Picture 1 (tube, one colour):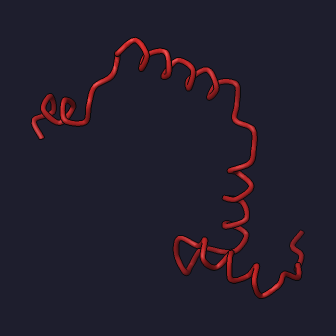
Picture 2 (cartoon, rainbow, N blue to C red; picture 1 turned 135 degrees about the horizontal axis):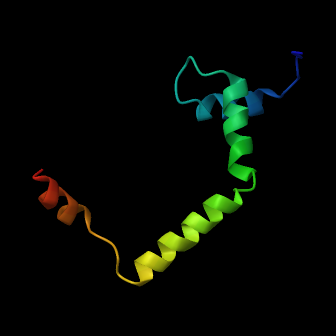
Length: 72
């Protein structure tokens, strides 16, 4: 079910400024904002922790190293 909401001109301008393209709807902008505040999944939390561990252990490569390996 769709509905109409009332917002101030100031808020409308702020939402307009957050659009990535003129075709993006205000609903999409609002969903993007909500997503930023949603809780991340347990799987994502584990992945982040694993990445931090690998970083601390030095299991990382610089962009220059990856480019060299790929011949770029």
